[in-house]
Image (cartoon, rainbow, N blue to C red; front, side, top):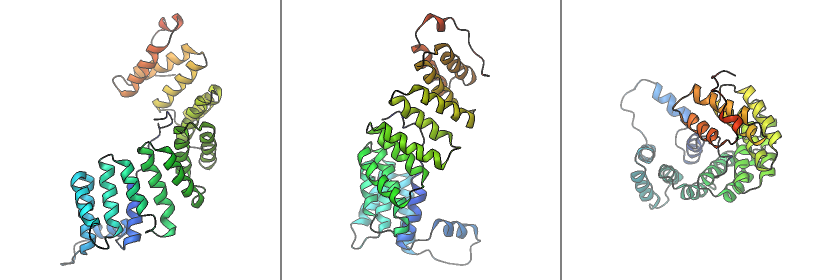
Length: 281
């Protein structure tokens, strides 16, 4: 996986649940929530198709193997609805069979309204990213961006796919677009810094990390990244200081372990004699 794969992926399910609701005539999420908030009024029965979809999705999320079996049986029936494919995709995601999930979701692309198709394509791209097939992710992300040319998350996702293919300058281009659309997001600057490191532009990488830290000063991940940038620029003492601050401030955490590993890899007598730094800067 690329180093750019540091940012959290957006959740796959909210988009898809609404897509399936629109495609199948199932109640949209807001309508379901409104109904849940209302007091029970007599013996109102749930539609059998809705009930089957709900039960299948519950299984897919909580017991994905059983959910997949239920979805497969549903798909084998004549004129099975798109909801069956969605349930199968949900179960495959739970089983970490992301490539198969992407194929299931792709089968839905012709079933949804044009107004929702781009969001479905974005989610297919997400699944291909998780399957570590960036070429396929890039293809559907590019198709989605034709319909959603100002979608920040799509630019971020496609930048990660490009980085995974080794196309770092193109990744920077997408992150530039994302940054123009959302200049206050530290995660975009962090990702662009990682891309700059890959094209041997450490000063540009450091500049982005410093701006990101101004936007999110409590983010220890950014502090670790700044240490990496400083070390690559030959500023070993400053790098060691930053990592020691993380160790002191959050002992026993994953961030502290990463900082300790980086600190141990630093070479040079000037760092080995450095006193421990406090958590302040």
